[in-house]
Length: 351
Ligand SMILES: C[S@@+](CC[C@H](N)C(=O)[O-])C[C@H]1O[C@@H](n2cnc3c(N)ncnc32)[C@H](O)[C@@H]1O
Image (cartoon, rainbow, N blue to C red):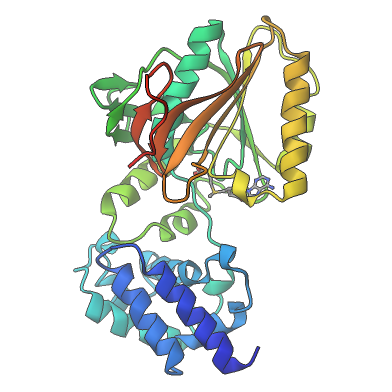
């Protein structure tokens, strides 16, 4: 691919990313696209990663790298326009500062860093699922999270929730999660927690990295993530550096008596290769065949709805149990939650 074609391709990805209506990144992404096509300075940090596939979300690598510099005090002119840094949110002024950062070479290393996220608000969608399986078995939970990132969803029971009319969790928790919709929230006791990730993150060491991928106009989400990272640092959890399938095979080889083993994941399955997905599924189903009422197994997953643009769905399989069920339809970041189990009329896509 020649240089002109590569620029055109990256510009088109920048414009595609600008599809979401948002007051700061949307105009910045459009300005970046025009600048890349016109041969401007933003091509400098983008050129070395232009060949990467769409899944690597190169536009967000660039914006995350710039946000990181702003958060660490190394880009004060850009920080002055980012709401997460106390700035004014002026997209025109932010664009001039961002273009200067690109020209300076300050983002050359940053775009080499893959995008990494961990969204504590997704716990609002998982929580009713944990309550459901706990109620069915009456057992404490042994949590096994695949693709746990920094483990923020492994500490879900330390957060306070308000979901529709229901509340759950310690009222004074520094992490307060509010979600529209509704779902029954029953008692849950966590006995053990462990996760895996190809690239596990540390809530303290990698806090700025995770924060940098929050869009800077979303101050509420940024503050919630900050609070969840600080809280996670006080609740030790093991997250093994491992791929999903091999890790599940190792964790599930022996049934665990007296607990309900809950394998779960959120917005992870799409990142597994076809072969790894099949092997992970086999490991879970094999464990299911070995399960019984004293050592049951559940597989809870919050993953995109099969219909594109329809949000996410919460699916459950239990052993012993009735098979696979859709429990709820949810937003991609947790709420709104439409609890489906038992509702007449079948599931409708989440808003
Ligand atoms: C979009 S993030 C979601 C993180 C977290 N589950 C959440 O909802 O906030 C996807 C995570 O899956 C991890 N991942 C991707 N492929 C994986 C694999 N084959 N095995 C384990 N983890 C994987 C990534 O490193 C990343 O942390």
